[in-house]
Length: 170
Ligand code: NI
Image (cartoon, rainbow, N blue to C red; front, side, top):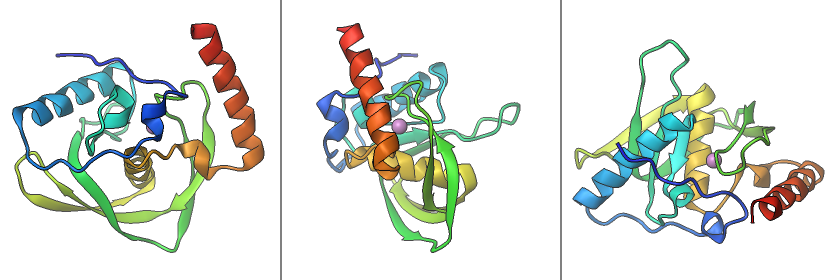
C-alpha cells in the first residue's frame, strides 16, 4: 500500500488537461492501486490523477454507503457519452479543496465509457451520487474543479479562503 501526496489548490497541475493512456502498463496499474489507497485513506469517494500530480487520464471512485460493501471503480480514459436533460443538485467537496463544500447542479444521469484494467472497453450508467462523482472526477482530468460550476459569488468566497490557506501553508 502506498499513499500519494494529494495536491491542493491552487497548484497549476489541477488546471491542466491529462493525456489519454495509450497502454495499460504496470506503472498505470500501480498508479490506480496507489490512488485507491490514497482515496480510502483520505477518506474520499473519488480521486483523479491530476490530484496526485500525474497527467494521465485515470480515476478511482467508491461511492458505496458507509456500512455497505466497497465498490471500487478504476477507470482509464473515461468519457461521458450521454447525459440526461434532467439535473440534480448535490453537495460536493474535493480532496484538493478541503473544507469547502458547495451544492453543484449537474446532469442527474450519465453514461460513461472507459477502459478497464482488464483491457476491455466498458460502459457504466450512473445516477445519484455516483453520477455526480464520475462527472466531478472526469472534470479533474480536464482541469475543471467543482467550484467552476457554482455561482461567481460563492466561488470568489471559497477562492479567497483557499488563497489565504495556501499562504498559511507556505
Ligand atoms: Ni475533486
